[in-house]
Amino acid sequence: MAETINTLNKRTLKKETFLAALLNSDGNISKACGQTNISRTTIYDWIKKDDKFQEKVSYVNEELLDMAEDQLLKMIRKGNLTATIFYLKTKGQSRGYIEKQYVHQTQMMTPIKIFDMPDEVVIR
Image 1: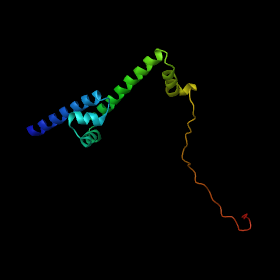
Image 2: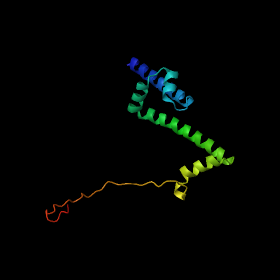
Image 3: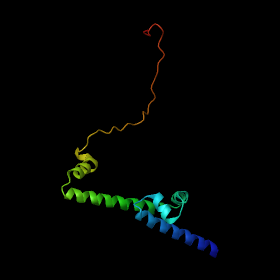
Image 4: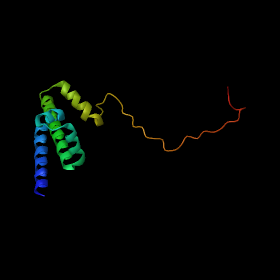
């Protein structure tokens, strides 16, 4: 039993070490694996089987996204026109700042009816 607890503690420590490396490598899983000497297969296995670990990996990605958004907003505040246009195209679509239209297509729910026509009605 003590051996099982020791194994769990080691795994937990490895997971936490990996998460720190993931943040320091800007979310790059391969780089974090290299820094911690943990295989990608192991990481994806942990993500698949451990909901809390999966949540923490997602949190790292969200944190990096927040950092990128912060940098974008800093550029907008400095008057960077490209950053402003990008922001409006992505966040301002509901206000009309959009270059293309998105078409939402739903599956047809009723079947198409095909009728047999008599030969004399068919145009050839």
